[in-house]
Length: 153
Image 1 (spheres, one colour):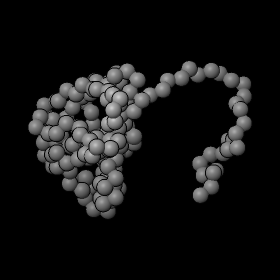
Image 2: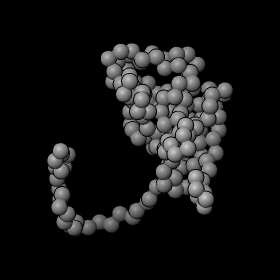
Image 3: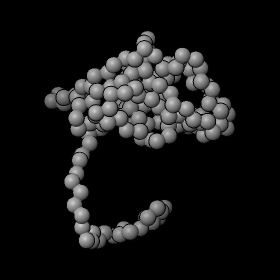
Image 4: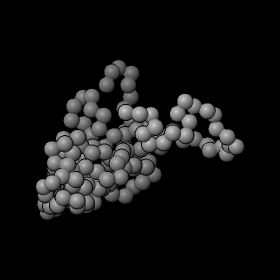
């Protein structure tokens, strides 16, 4: 961080299944996401096409106006085809339950998740809230009502 940057803080409660595991951690000084580890007792075999909710071993209390986004780790996705469903998953500032990661194996081979494996990353982001005003029409844009793929390749 540069001088004048103030880091927000969040309280983490380590759950029994998370005892002895690293807390979410930024692996480099400029990393946007901090890694989350698998807080499982026994190895978990994800067969191709399988999905599972993997506990992260903690609960978090975020300040109002922030969210935590649970995202895939790019290396896990590239090397093994293992990624997160519901991605990015959102942890709201008022949620106090256990954090979990929904993993899916899109790869061709079984993948073994072990205790302490880095399975996802968590990005903390500001949240903007808006008031919704009912309108009778919307302003025109160059895209207009173009849907999926409407802007070309």
